[in-house]
Image 1 (spheres, one colour):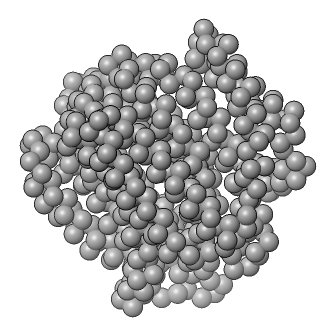
Image 2 (tube, helix red, strand yellow):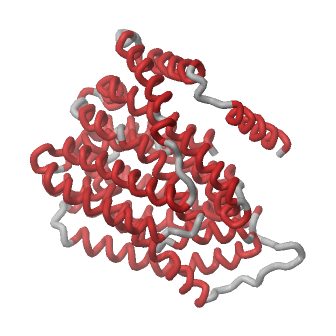
Image 3 (tube, helix red, strand yellow):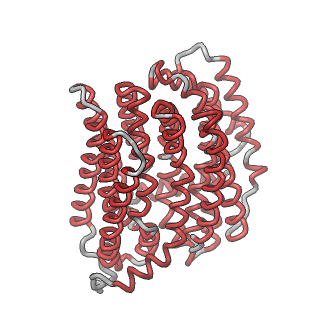
Amino acid sequence: MLIAQVLSSVVGFFSVMFMARYLGAENYGVLSFALAFTGIFGILTDLGVGRLATREIARDKSLTAKYLINLSTIKAIAVAATFALIALTINLMNYPQQTITVVYLAGLAVVINAFSQIFSGIFVAYERMEYHSLGLFFYSIAMLVGVVLATRFKLGVVDFAVLWCLASAVVLLYSFAVYRRKFAQPQAGNVTVKAGIDWSLSKSLVKAALPLLLASIFTVIAYRIDMVMLSQMKGDAAVGLYSAAYTLINALGFIPVAFTVALYPVLSQLHISAQDSLRFAYQKSFKYLLLVGLPIAVATTLVADRIILGIYSGGFSEAAAALRILIWTAPFNFLNMLLVTMVISINRQDLITRVALLSMVLNVIGNLILIPKYSYTGASIATAVTGALAFALYLYFVSRLVCRVELHRLIVKPAIACGVMAGSLILLQHLNLFLVVPIAAIIYLAVLFLLRTFTREDFDLLRQIAARRKAG
């Protein structure tokens, strides 16, 4: 899963780089706005039932076909309503016809992805991460090939939006083929559960998922409304600069996503079978994600200018200011993904709704206050503060319901290592960035080892994982 996420992120990185350089800040802003706008509505295509279905299938594989049919029925109704809502809203907002067309195409991609997510959830429930991972990789490759061809033939911003639809269609076809070949006959012992549309099951799924749906709506608004507000208040160029920095932060998402997606079905099972193991998994996961997220934020803050210029060229140089602020959402986002996964695994998804609502309110108010005066820099501040608030609330809930992590102790050694790493980055700033970054990473790891951050228990766990993979 991690390897595929890394490869997908690398390929996606080049896609974004070529696209942004070719289109420029304004046209890239149009694309970014369309993604953010449709993403706000796109959450309605799932209604929150996807993750609950994955959890239940992980606990009982014989339910696979039944959940597939009922999820497909729910989504068919949901996507039709969602696309209609997207079309109605964008036409009421007085945007140019080109922007409206791009939004339509982005909305179609959202519809296609909604069905792909059903199959991805099944792959995850079975802990067959290779199939889920290959889908991500195929999407990235399809996008990269499309972007290269579009720039070669000098196509316009609408044609780039078509690429989203084509890449999404590739993943849907792949996912359906894998399901038919590997998962089409789920069995529990010698018993096959009869599959069919079960309206009572569908209703109970939607009802149970309502807290997740509301949480998803609030979260998406909290983290995507900024681009819509920037577009309305400051124009497409500001959106393009903000999105250039924000896209790099999203690219880092492969780390916690790979980790928590693989962990989710395990945690769901441990909650009903082994509470001690659940606490152990949570504490170790928290430690590892903190050790990864913190140095990324520190290092990026120091070399933000060089990163932006190296990736996007001089036309996006002003995005460095946004990147220095947004990068501090990374450590919080890494840990938030783990905390959200924990909350869902223990059947307390209702708590996510509370946190998401508060986050949305804070972010919208922050954007209303900061964007008019500070433009995309203000939006960056609002996003960073929102991530910190969500982390504090999730940590409080998980500490009460599962167990506490001694954050004040966990952070001391990585903070010292980050300080040493930061000094090396300053001293070596005259070197090429591709040389400085690995040197800084090695220094960070070396200091962690010298401070004995990793215990014998950590090394034993690593050996057990390696042995299990070898046996598999």
